[in-house]
Length: 216
Image (cartoon, rainbow, N blue to C red; front, side, top):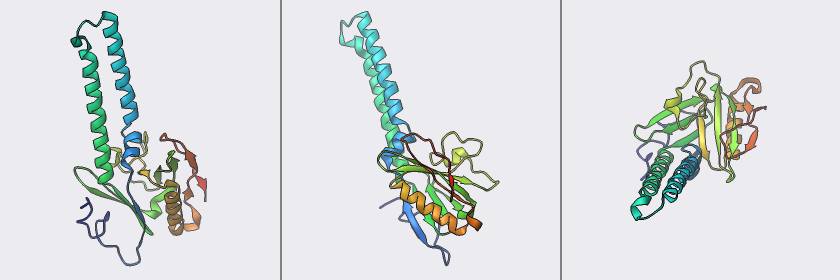
């Protein structure tokens, strides 16, 4: 049983209206999400440095009993706990997330404690960004043309990093991201007048950086 089994259509709040069809559905890979959104590698490195510092201090003072390594053990324990919690959050976020692309909208079904549904009509998507990770997964931020903005906290972790003033919804850690970006770009072009949407420039990077969109 999954988080979306109770829904009429998994990932959607109701049945599709006449003429609307699903083009793609997918969810984040939780391991990639842990690295890129919850920064588990950075946190691990931080605690490794702290443990090394504690070990160096213990060696400098002289280790005469096992209790002299209590600081190292405590730091390592806190580090394991912190990284474990971050991995658990990433797993929970990935399990409760489902992205849906139809020929009319993009739907984010997200939320660990409280599930919510974010509908983005395709005419509001002005451009699609893409940052590829080494395994072929990637992040796809969506620049919106709507005057009404979505809240960054309400979107996170499904938001482009550091865009606090003008938050951009972002599909996170999506497998086969280049193909998905192409599908979104084509779907947007089909509903935009005179090809006004811009498609993504591909940037192969494990970091949350994005290329400039190029004219379709």
